Structures are given as C-alpha cells and as structure tokens.
Image (cartoon, one colour):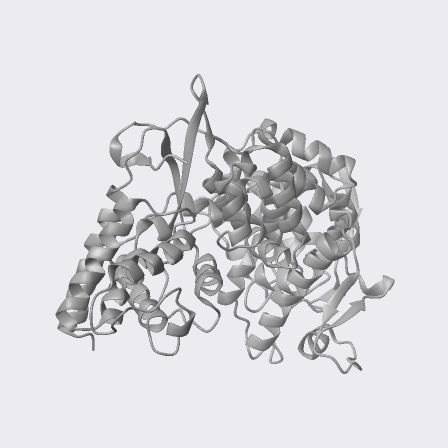
Amino acid sequence: MVSFLSLTGLASGAMAAAAITSAHAATSSQVVSMRRLTQQEYRNSIADIFGKEIEVRGAFEPTIRIGGLQAASTSVLSVTPVGFESFTNMADSIAIQVTGEKYRAKLPCAPNASREPDDGCTAQILSHYGRMLFRRPLTQEEIASAVNLSRGLAKSQNDFYAGLRYGMASLLQAPNFIFRMEAAVPVGDKQWTLDPYSRATRLSYLMWDSTPDEELVQAAEKGELNTAAGLEKQVDRLMASPRLDIGMRTFFNDMLELDTFDTVSKDSILYPKWSSGIAASAKEETLRTTIDLALHENGDMRDLMTTRKTFLNRSLAADYQIPFPFKGEWMPYEFPADSGRSGVLTQASMLAMFSHPGRSSPTKRGVAVMDIFLCEPTPNPPNNVDFSIVNDTSGRLKTVRERLMAHATTSTCASCHNHSDPIGLSLEGFDTIGQRRITENGQLIDLSASLQGKKFVDAQGLGQFLHDNPKYTACLARKVYAYSRGENSEDVPASAFKAAYNSFADSGFRMRSLLKSMVEDKDYFSAPAPETASPASKVPAQ
C-alpha cells in the first residue's frame, strides 16, 4: 500500500512536472510535434540512463496501428488519467531504486549530511540525469523546480535521499521524458527545421530504439548535427554499432505486424503441436531472417520475398516437420528447393498470424500482403456481408477457392476479393500453422493466381512476383520514412523520400543505404511551422 506521504510526494512531483513543462520560455525554438514513448522505448531509455539493473514495473497503455504502423500513433495518442497514474507509479518506483542504498555509489555526488538537504548535490544529480531523460540540458527554471521539491521533502523527512527521490520522480513523470518533444527553429520564410537535440533524438530512436547517448548529445550541443559532415559522422557511428540490430528489429516488428502474434491462437484439437513456444519462436525466426539479410549480409531487400535461408530452433523444426540435428539453440538453415518456401511470406509467423484458429484464410493472408508489402490497404467489408458460403467447410464446395469464388459473386464483394484473394490462394499450399500440404478435403489444391496482369503459381511464384514488383521496395522505403517521423504512411507523398529511394535503388536495395540516404537528406529534418506561437509551446533556445 502506498503511504499518505508517498501520495503527497507524488502529487507534488506531478505539480513539479507541470512546472518543468511550463518553464519552457524562449524566443526561437518551438515544439512542433510530440511522440509518446512506446513501452520498449521507455524500457530501453531507462536501462541506458540508469543501468539494466533498474526494473520498470507497471503497465503501459496500448498503441494503435495507423497506416500499417503503430509508430504513427505515437504522434496522436495522449495519456489518459489511468495512464498518468501508471507513469507516476513507474516514476516513483524507478526513483526509489535509483536513490536506494544499492545504487547511491553510482550517483554523481554525495550530500554533506545524509539527514539534511544539499541543494548543490541535488542540482548536480538532477541536472546529470535530467539531461539524459529530457534528451537536452535542463533550464535553470527546471532545475530549480526539481531542487525545491527535493529540499522541501528532505526537510520534512530529515533524509536527503527521500527528498531526492521525489525530485527524480518529478523528472521521470514529466511530459518532456514521456513524450519525445520535437522542437524546431525557423530557417527562412515559413520554413522550420528540427533543432540539434530533436535531431539527435530522432536519429537515436530510429537507429537504436533508445535515448541519445552522451556522444550524440554532445554533437547536438556543439551544433555538429546541423552540418553535413557532423551529421554523417554520427550516422555512420550509429549504423556501425551492433545496437542498430535493436532499432531495426523494432521497425520490422512494427512493419511486419509481429506484435499481433501475441493474440494468435490455434485449435488445440486440430493442431495439438502448436504452442506459445512455437509462436514465440516463429516471431523470432522472422526477425532473425530479416535482420540477417538487411544488416549482417547487407543484402538485397527484394530477396526477403524469395530467400529460403532462415534460422531454426527445435520447436520450429517440429512445426516445419524437419529434423533438428543441431546442438545450438538457434541455427542457420536453408529450406530445399522443393520445399515450396519463399521468403518471410512462407514462414510460420506470417502464415499463422493471418489465418483462422482452425483453418487457413486466403483473404486474410492476401489483405496482409497487400497492406504490409505493397502499401495497398484493402477496405473493410460492409457490415452486412454474408460469409456463410466461405465458412461452410463441410458442404459441397470442398476447397476454399471454390467457396471464395461462390462468395464473391456480387460486385461489392468481388472488388475486394479480386484485390487480395489471388495472393492468399497462392499460399494455400500451407495450413494455418505453416505446415506444407497439397490437398484440401481430398482435393488437389489449385495454387495458380493472377494479379495486376501477372500470372504466377504457388508461394514461390508469389515471392518472385513481389521481388520484381517496384511497389514492394517503394512501400518499404515509405514505411521506414513514416516510422522514423511518426507519420501515417498513407499520407506520405513519394516526393518526401524520393532521393532516399533513388539511393536505395542504386545500391541494389540495401537497407543500410536507405537509412543513411534518408536521414542525411537535406529535407529529412524539416518541420511544419508551429500552429501557434504561444509561450506554452516554446522550448529553450538551443
């Protein structure tokens, strides 16, 4: 149970957090966008700032998917009262750990007397951590607000660290930490660009999925990120780090909608071998395959649609019905040419996510491929659509192809099904948990398809169709751009990432080239003009 004193302190911390936000009063730099930290960004940031031993305890409010990306919702979601309470409790929990006896040796200073306030030491500690939490130096007003809160509580409790706890918590629950405040400065007539600290923040969360490190913050302080040479130096450093794997895993987890795997279930009677362990392994397989191709091999991203190379553990080998004679947990593996496998489309993750619990779904699979890989979302069906023919698996129509053709007899249904079903029907050689099959209800499965004037057969034909389709690489570039800026990919014009896409294509569609050319483009850090110029929207001049 939280004590009355704790509640009083947290309330004071909330007021201090508000004071910290309202303390932003400057003349040139203004907030132009706010992005709420995701759960993983929050956790990674706390680990990088305080150390991995600090536990983050609490629940996070969910994000939503906009334009195919959850990242886009971080720019529009606020914090509900319940969410604020959760952030407040998490802030206090972290502050208790950071000011506890086990951690105190890591603090920048120690007080002159542990039972009395020490404004000098308090300011030093809060300035040190506040700079990392806010991703910029604190203003004098912000420091003073947190120090005053700490002093008052240290006096009332005769404990320096008890007061420091609430000063620290006020920073941790402040909007400047919970939200990525992107501030911009004017550079011409109605033209604005992100200030150096906002540039550092955007780069770091894209590349490493975490707060900027000390070197990146120093580069911002020195104005180096505003020069082509300084920006390139930091981009090359960030991309050379193994932590790039973390940032890109987060992106691909979002783009490929692998987060939805947490809610996937299968009929345990029909598929007794399916388990939560296989589900987790399937998700990991896809991420390992993607990161290995994109970063470790620096391969052609089009090959993600056709490669038979992957990584397996014992659980997945059982699902794929292949032997696992290896000693390691995860081992590289290449499916044979006659396996029917073709890239991530035929991995258990994608096949299982976009199927029903007891059977496959050409429509769900087709809709997913069109949305995820071609940026062509399929409209939601009308509320009064009759799905009885499709769902009747015991009737005279033995295959799902026959049932779908009978279902899509009206113009309303046909327009959507013709858009996505050909893709899904070419994947019918795999059941709802990703196992190979050649018949359905005793009937040989027809895997032929025709889409956008192109005819192909089975998953390998589909993979080659997507490999050769310029819409796939353009969609990938669009989603990387939208993800990095927290924008709806459907609202991003092709002109916004044209230069980056051209470099991407010229490189043979290498992911590293796309990232580098995108963030170093002269317009990447451009920002919309602030809607208002009220003092509350201003941030310290950098």
